[in-house]
Image 1 (tube, rainbow, N blue to C red):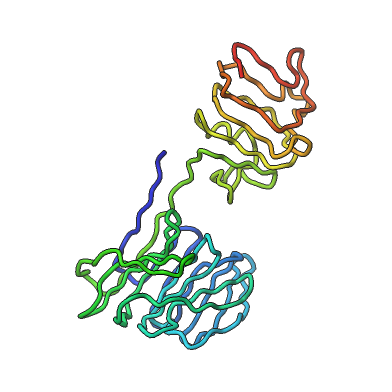
Image 2 (tube, one colour; image 1 turned 45 degrees about the horizontal axis):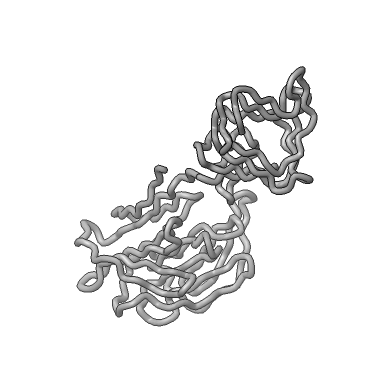
Length: 290
């Protein structure tokens, strides 16, 4: 299983987030991707906006109290659905979370230490479910910290070397999804990665990307396709056999086992219908023993 999980430091003015995008722009405001497919913007005075890329419109949201967004940074915590902002000041109230779905703000525990660094960069590490903060402060802290929203706690990780430029940025390289459970939904897309949040549209695509021992979980719906295990010893599991239907569309066998699949190749939880062939219209099986 190959995944990438890294936090990368860069010396420039922007903090991009690989997802859609997140940018931390010093001196004016903090802007980052948030829940509800919106980009959340907060200025120095706590005025908050939500921008919708799809419609090219923005809406004014509930403001928060004075927030030093002119020299702060932020990231979207995917698991909690909260946008986490960190201001430069060491005073209380400079770490807070915004929930777009409820349009509410929450004051969180401030980062440890007393430095008031104006050079902060923040990213979300999806693998550990932590906010990662890189801080540079002349004559003070130069460090990396992590924040856990679930417990509202900070952890000091390591000291940074002296950077070549006080302006810094940090971005998280999102790990690619690699199973072993692949998800399929009638409203998914085969351009997705097959994770629970981004399911495939077809069962066959899930089979094609799986490896022996993997599981393909199929949500209720009707799937018009003809599937072939292609020698994969995997489990293909429907959500409910009454409501999870594979429709062969009169295009041959609905399900085929013909490449030596063994007893660990499992098909369960489906209604199979509308196959058409002289042999095995529903399930065709040869030289295999699923």
